[in-house]
Every structure is written in C-alpha cells, then in structure tokens.
Image 1 (tube, rainbow, N blue to C red):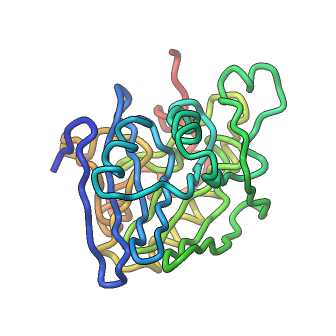
Image 2: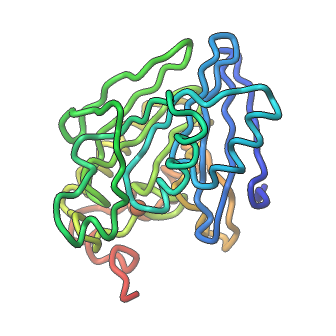
Length: 247
Ligand SMILES: [Fe+2]
C-alpha cells in the first residue's frame, strides 16, 4: 500500500494498543503513534504535521500525551512546537545526546527542549512504558548523535537509522559512520529476534528493491533485502553510495 499525504493506517493488536502510521510532507516522513485508549495514552513519534495529527486525534476524542523523538533533525521535530502549544502538559522525550552544542549543529538540529531524556549508552536498550504501551528504546547513534529506535506492539520504528532498502546518511554534522555500523549490527540482531511479520517503519518512505515505495516492509523482508543490514563488513558498508550526498 502507499498512504496518501496525512492518511492514517491503523492496526489493532490483540494487546489493545492501536498503532497509527502515516506519511507527511515532501520528504515523505513516516510518523507513528502508539495509542492506549483505556488509559488515555497517546504517544507520537517524530510528529511532522502538527495540525494533521491534532485534527485526526480530536476526531477520535484523543489527546496527545507524549512525543517520542528518534532524533532532532528538523524534519523529525517540525510538529513538536505546535502540538506542545495546544497541549502544554505533553511530555517530550529524546536522548540527551541528540541536542548538538555546535553552531553548525544548531542550524541543522532544531533546538528541542525535552521534558524527559534517556541517557543510556550506544547499543543499549531501555524500556519505556506508559499505560499498557511498552516500547524498547535502543540508543543507535551514527546518522545523528543520540538517535534512538523504538520497538513494540508489532512495529520497529527505525527513524533515520534504517529505511526499507538502505540506511540513513552519515555525512551530516554529528554523523559517525563507525557508530552507524555498530548501530546497524545491533539493529540486525534485534530484528532477527523479533517476530518476522512485524513491520519496519522507516523514517522516510524511500524506494524498495522493486522500485515501489511501500510505507513499510516486514522485518523478514528488511533482513533479506536491506543493503546495509547485509553488508559483510564496514569497508563495504562505508563505500555504499547513499551514505554521502553532494546536496
Ligand atoms: Fe535525520
């Protein structure tokens, strides 16, 4: 399937947690929400279009309670300010290392004021839970400092660590190709140990191996075909053309 701009795909697991997935904006940012209606918990990952989210949630009488950020590049945080303005009590979570102290970093990274931070080491995972939502938060730097992934309730939310067929660029301020290689190895072992029919939700909807642009692929498909997950060594990985761009 291919979601239209701001269209929501909702899955209902047998754990009473709804997972909403949408794509928004000209870079096809993928957004995910974990919703526990019984306990009134609505956790948005990397909200792009604040008004789109606020409208869709209001239509269902839902109030956003948490924003969870994979990283603080502008296209992953653009919706935070307006959502926070509408719901000042919302909690905003991110990794402490994802706010850049450098000048060039401040141009690229939106200054995001977290209300809560994770501070665990690279490749470590900690559980985040609220109501019946339970997510593993894995610190996965490389594309950016303090990048994290989330998995639980049938999805692995990859941020810009992984897209369906490849991985995120490592030529931006704060990028670290060696850390990225380690984060990919950690991601691979996580994916291998999760149910193969879970979905990998990429940070952006980019091309898949057949030229289509699916919103997600299964973990089985990603493990089989993702070029970065299948690179045999760091030299091969580092030479992959999508790691660095001229733009
Ligand atoms: Fe990014």
